[in-house]
Image (tube, rainbow, N blue to C red; front, top):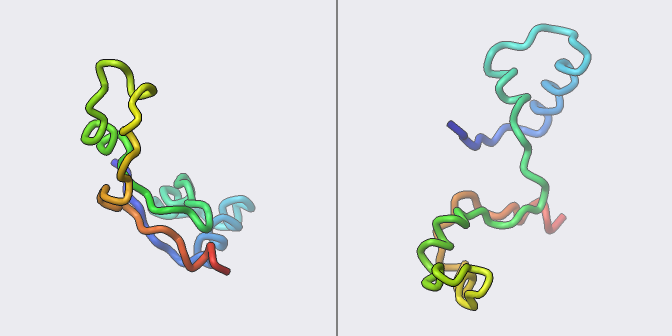
Length: 90
């Protein structure tokens, strides 16, 4: 299972520091967090592109590369994670 969590940057940096230095043992959830992938600052809105492609592209028999409509209305796709506007404007 994959899950997205929001933790303070300072807490993540602290966990990273002690994990790298091996200063103190990390608990189970701290180890799980450290195996996560941080989203980049200023990322755009995240959507399920595969679900969008299957819903919108009606020309799959010819291949979506030939379909001029496969990316016609991405703004209508439900958002999974909002864009990181605060970080991208700074």
